[in-house]
Length: 131
Image (cartoon, rainbow, N blue to C red; front, side, top):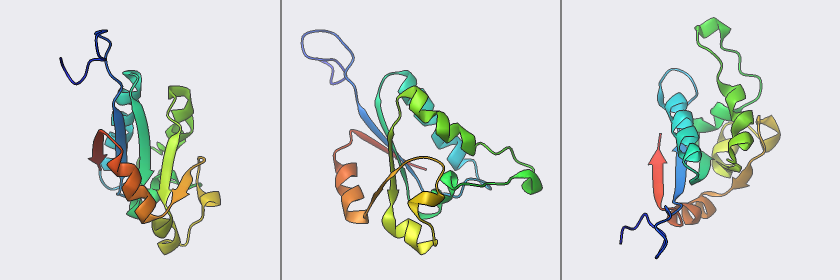
C-alpha cells in the first residue's frame, strides 16, 4: 500500500507540510515562490504551516511600501491565508527580537515560538521546505 493512501480506503492521506521562510520579501524570488507553494498545498487539502525566521519575518511586517523598488507588494496575500484554511503561522522569537520587532508589528496573527520549540514542531512534519 502506498504511504500516501489511508489504510484500506484508498483515500489520499493528509501530509503535514511546513514551509520555512528565511529570506526578505523582496530582492529574490524565494518569498513569493514559498507563498505559491503554500497555496498549492492547501488546494490539495494538505495540513500546511508557515514559519518565518531570520529575515523571513519581514515578509509579514506591517506597512510594506514597494513603490520605490518597482515591485508589487504581495504582503496583503498573507491576510487571505485563512480563506484557504492555512492558520498555522509561526515566527521565531529570536528572529523577531534580533530585528527589533514584536508580534504587534506583523500583518497576521502568529504564534511566536523559541528556536527549540520550532525545532520540535519541525520534527513532527512529514515534509519541510526551506525558502
